[in-house]
Image (tube, rainbow, N blue to C red; front, side, top):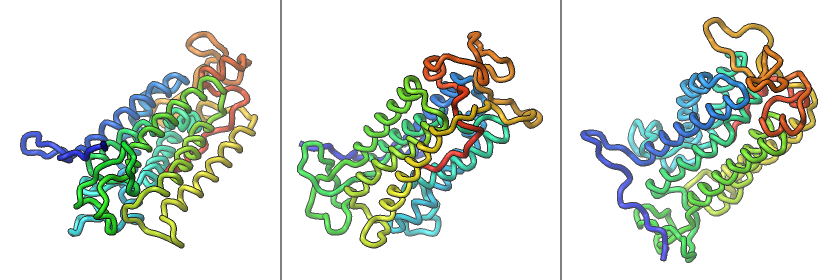
Length: 323
């Protein structure tokens, strides 16, 4: 009993060959945009900002993810002149993708004079959903697996995909599946915390960085695919450890702040661009007639809505990269 490997990694659509790996990323990105739009609108933001951010951040994330992949797993770069660019024939490093995408996203959010801290919290669960869907693409590529195992859910890997030294084994730890499950569980946890625990922004994003990075420490201890090593450990292991500590410190720091979070930066938005506002910004009330940021609001209401209450942290912190 084991998990079989897929026989094909794509399908033909007329003259085009569609790789499941790329298709999963398209589906994941689409879901992330839709989820973020819903969450951003719930805190009074303009949903159109999400599309603008995605238009710039997604290409940046793909470029950053590919650069990180090429640096950390050079043995997987296809052996032709455009191999370092061949996303369809290799992979993306999630930390490089999040780092580049977050940097560009912060730029777009600040250009619209919107609150970067609130936006980061809105996007955090959505990123995890996108990552989970992307791991299905790893399954079709027969990659991202761990060491040999005899467990019933071991993943069968064909001989041509097994790394050197493991040709005698048939089933391996399905680390892609472990991460898929963890990503969805952490996404659900962040949504719950945002509704029931009044986390000050960008605390949810900081927890995303902390939680995902901590899981990667476990995952990297299982993986056997080729990777750059330093002092006997995979390079990704060091990145995961550093980001786990940094994310935890970032969360602690954000929750100690007691200054109000403005929904938008002071001053008008750039000409022709919409402002993304938290509930009540500029009116003193939310669309439901509830007190807006800067006015008194019952603690349980502010916690449940995920809005920027008077105790929330200050203006738009740039989102840290998540791996």
